[in-house]
Length: 246
Image (tube, rainbow, N blue to C red; front, side, top):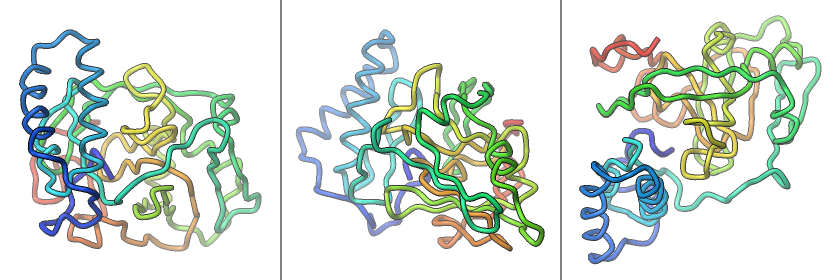
């Protein structure tokens, strides 16, 4: 997922190469974005997100956009979803499986929190606002069955997955997020809906969220299968000592 950890050395899952002129232009824009006014920063963010989707080298992921995020991808392309066709399913070990529309999620009680975002690759974006529905609200509405111990998340990029223990998923600082930085989640940031796990490294906050499945036990997600810790507490996992975000 982007802007989570970068693809492996092979550039697995990347698309068509970015031309030399585009990449050099990206470098120039990256430098300019450090001192740019907010409107230009937003344009830079959109440009880098689109460029990263077509960059097999991962080099665009080394550049900060106006908001300080990096862009990575593990899928060659990701379809766009909006209020007309977005659906989020809740199933597995539950009594009342459900399918939520975007408008339905927006109608539920919303929680806003402001925390630092910490990527396991080292970069950090301070004071980032996320807003959405607490995951525990959706789980309670579905009626989690006895014997359940974990929650698995799937995404409409067709590739990414993540998992949390049931206790972790029920934390008050775990959101099904609809907004970031006080605006609706854009496609490049995983919109229209993403997971946000505030106290863990950002690879746990799966983008383009489409499925929530209650299971008996944790199943390692995309990056855990490639060596990252399943329990990804900031500063207490992956051999890092970053300051906590909680």
